[in-house]
Image (cartoon, rainbow, N blue to C red; front, top):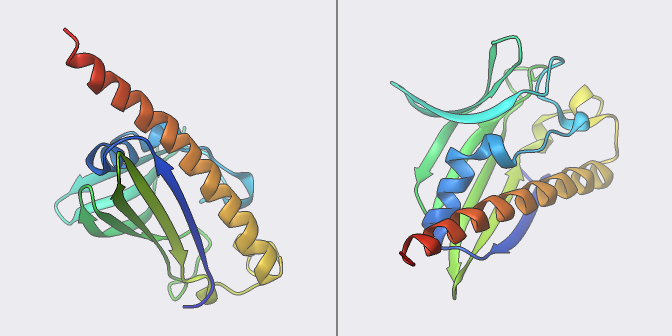
Length: 168
């Protein structure tokens, strides 16, 4: 798996808080991108759900339908998250995954997203828009950077709220 996107950003909050914002408030900071829609009916609202088989990442569509983006493969609060990632048009052998690492760096958290497995999705596939590898990966990386910027805002709000609780 050599075709991958790696994006990192420091967020001014501890790893546990950033992990919580990433997983419990994904619907608030996630911004859809029409180039990378999960289904023809996207965008919906993203959410992590827990069921008898563990956690999964889903997109809830306005119609009430739920599209499973992927099963969570690793769930280590405050440390690491790994989830399968697929679009509705992916064939069974097309498998990408997203790994998110949360590392304390002084009073911040370095969040690193690695989205790998794009070698399993042919260049001609609708998900890749016939872009050359470099351009596709750059555009996808830009989107992940925008997403992490949204996460940073949400995590900072949560951090400010937690700091304010101690002021009473």
